[in-house]
Amino acid sequence: MGKSELKKLVFGKKLLPLILVLVVILLLATGFMFANKKVHIAVDDSTLVISTLHSKPEDVLVQAGVNLGSKDEYRLSTAKLTNGTVISVQRAVPVTIAYQGKSEVVLTAKRTVGEIAESMGMNRPDIKLVPSAQAKVEPNMHVQFVTLTEKIVEREVPERFTIIR
Image (cartoon, rainbow, N blue to C red; front, side, top):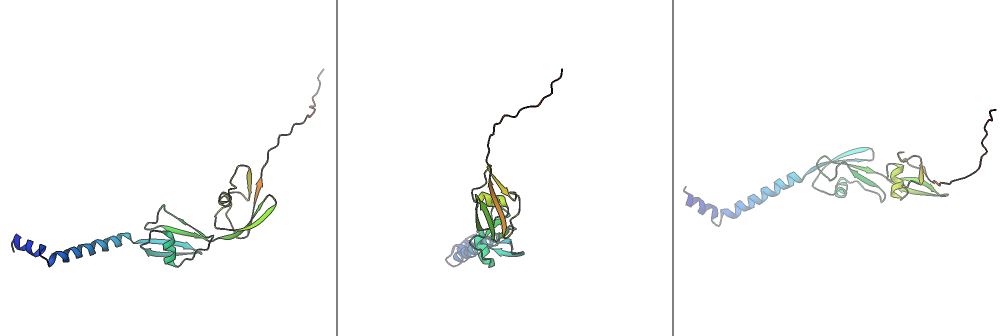
């Protein structure tokens, strides 16, 4: 078979569309193969492993059947969703917040008292957190935001000293 006969066969009306279709199918198949990710989901004291084509964590959680409540949160172990990423789901728990004589029960999925204070805009130097900012949040925990004030008090105190003669 000569070059001219091969050109006629390839560029003829019958074989060229077939070759183009095969090339497109191969490109699509390899694209999906590289887009597939294995993701780990840590939720409710268990770990799920799921293969997905999704690039948004919300879509991966829906695919895995993980329902998030309105105050539940998730965190990624990597900046973006990639192969091997761990999605950690933190369920919201009730916490009692006391500030300036008022108490309120809030649902929060924050992991530490400091994160709660930051989310409420109370992470200021003039507010002391009880328990400390590093304390882990537990269900039905009581957290106090204590406002610190500074007062300068001047008073005269007689100094006692001994007289040596």
